[in-house]
Length: 143
Image 1: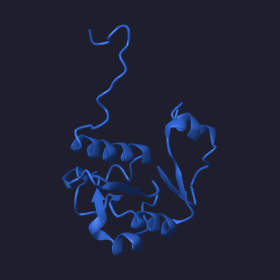
Image 2: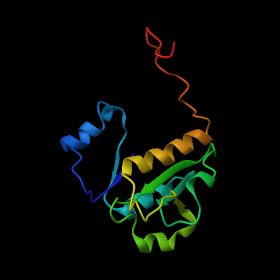
Image 3: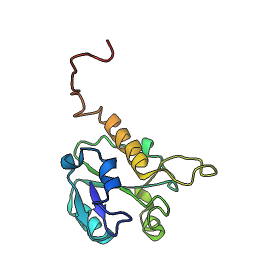
């Protein structure tokens, strides 16, 4: 997970920690001082594929090929209240992917929900590679 400063939250905030339950030690977090530093990181990766997630794009995230084995997919999400910077999106419309929504009733999605939607589509297209193993319990809940 890449986080770009300035944050709208405290990474040590107890609510943020609670939201991550006991998984924080399993997450590799890379911090970037600003959008330019993040873009420099992405551009240095020859296999990188940057996707700007917004409700304003022409192409839906589910219509995009996210299966490419060689690509490192970077999904960039904006703030829940303002989204990604408008000028940045205008400069990169070919990278923008839309999560369809009816904005007459819903202005924005929760950031974690939006991330889950897009990441699981990527995993679905990759046939859930790496998710084959499920912990087995003494009592199988479905038997």
